[in-house]
Amino acid sequence: MSKKVKISCRNVWKLYGSNPREFFDRHQGDPGEDAIRSEGYIPAVRHATFDVEEGEILVIMGLSGSGKSTLVRCLTRLIEPTSGKVEFDGIDLLGATDQELIDIRRHKMGMVFQHFALLPHRTVIQNIAFPLEVQGIDRETRDRKAREIIEIVGLHGRDDYYPRELSGGQQQRVGIGRSLAVEPDIWFLDEPFSALDPLIRKEMQDEFIRLQSMLNKTIVFITHDFDEAIKLADRIAIMYEGMIVQLGTAEQLITNPATDYVAEFTRDIPRAKLLSVGSIMEPTGEDVHPDLTVSQDDNVSKIASKVLSQDRDVRVVNAEDETVGILRRQHLVEVLFQD
Image (cartoon, rainbow, N blue to C red; front, side):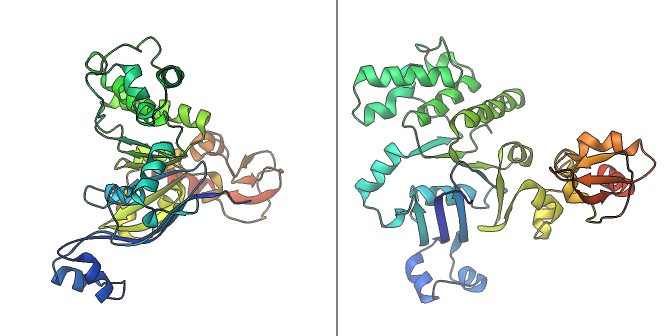
């Protein structure tokens, strides 16, 4: 059974220029590349269409200037789209009044950005409680909630520290905690770890995975780092010059890139750590090694040494131990050692 759709984005455009709405309407809602360039418009987002399901982590990625941050700001209406439709839990966000939008942001959405934007004159607990203060919640209630979040994000004992007294990773935990204070239905994160050094960044990625296992939030996460995307994402959308050129699992992007750009983007990813046996097997019922089987769900790197120690191809089975294919040793070698 399919999950509930939390965000539905349909044919969203964002054009910059002198009169983008008039230009867009004049071209019947589908201006071509030549028209866009000849009239001096900048297409920050084009034809963006996708859904985000409840509990899913959708990672949007691309190089600088690809449109990923603009797209997320269109989803939250921090930037007004030129055209298109965005629904949140069935609510038309682009048709919402200013007050309705404020209420949705205050009570339903959490946002974390690359720059922590902590209030320097407020302590950890005061920073985390700030969104609840904006909502008019009494101090005792918001402090109690903030202390719960401090425990969740791993800042026990630092309630009364000021941002200047925290490391970069700790400051980002405060930013994450502040965004969780409103118990958001959906969480938007725009390169939240990119300003951190590599070791702290890995620590925060692991922390993020731990939090998601506890909270099961619906998440839209922006990064330009494919390794980070692989680690965090259920699905990945790759953007190029304002367009989503492919959307799928990391395995789908690597095994079946839709464009040369996607192929180049994923070229240096170590496939053995990502691919499943099912993605490289041959679907055949041929009688193969009777004593050795591997699961179609196994990671290739997990079973490589076991398979290569044999002198025959091996049988691939499903969860019911039924034969579903054959894994050829030569094909495995090609996957492991390809240039």
